[in-house]
Image (cartoon, rainbow, N blue to C red):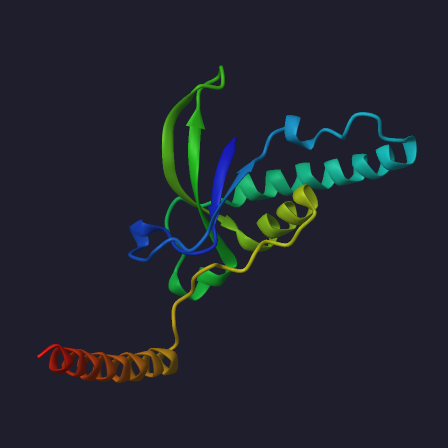
Length: 154
């Protein structure tokens, strides 16, 4: 199963996608690196087992309908592809929501890093007001500069 996780809402929910990360959850991706020692192998077995448990939790708790607004913070929006028995993709881009805590833990264990903060975020009302003031000031300055340059040309 392949899933694309985005840290934000799906377009079908009327919002924009903030960040998209491609995750491929499969037994092949959970195999230990070649040449690891026995001690590391034991660690890898525990890690692999936890990854498999998380994979089962994530897939069993996924939902295909948007979560209620009060639960938005507990879910990660994603797109899922459907595959036939031979592994050929038969349907792409199905909106799906995965449990956030388990998805982030899976990501940490699998890739050894924290999920990145969103590149973009919605501005607060205070930030929007400040931005509007700054834009109004910049607009006044630009009009004044344009008048000066036009006057200098004459």
